[in-house]
Length: 257
Image (tube, rainbow, N blue to C red; front, side, top):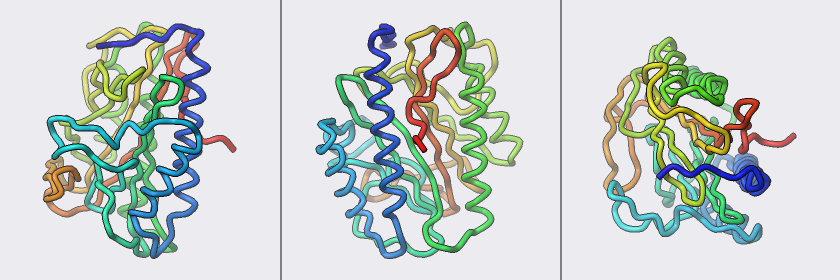
């Protein structure tokens, strides 16, 4: 299903996006050496409830997961890149942490992810991974305009990731959002320009470039959810929800200064 929002619904989408961005930034500021992933999950839950929003994750039960997710945010550390199930782990200096959050507010969903390094250490490989996903996300957003195609976004993302030297996994990528979290169209992180669904105003898309340092192969953790690099290498993930407007792409989950 592909939903197209009425222009009168855009303020609600903006409100949801702003909430997701604010929660992620608050969690980033509180994530320090020694912070437990379960505390991050608890804080996310508290902020979602306080805002009168609903979690898109806690009852989520797709075919690729083991039962309901049961938590409120994805916390992926180091070799974990997607769907990181919060568990009893305390963050260490230099850990690369990715937080992925989707909530519904006023009947509209927004989805975003950030990756950052915990503590004072700055491993060069981790810095490069995060930078590549952020630049690829910016390129994908720049390619998203009325009349363009999904393939134009995928090509822009893939060009940046490929030029940075990373292999690209196509099992998971971006997607449409609206009244539910995962909708069509699928937005691969590599593709051919001029192909796929033609973008039109009112379409909401979650774009999410992610990479692993030295592989494109994933393995599922024993928890049934967390996706890790098969080699144990580090990973990074960046995501924004955007709205296609008459003037181009409006980033709904951009942090406010």
